[in-house]
Image (tube, rainbow, N blue to C red; front, side):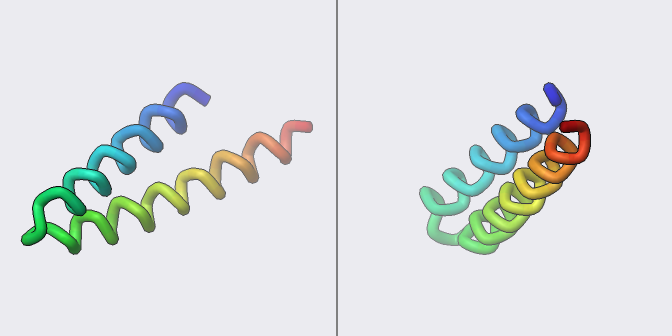
Length: 50
């Protein structure tokens, strides 16, 4: 579970960085997509264990 939290933090930082630097808007979009994918993947893994 720790690796999922780490990935979520990394994707969130990349998204914020992409929104701050206007030329890197694509980085924000990629960061948000990866954040959502990691969150769903982590939720599915956690739900499968229960």
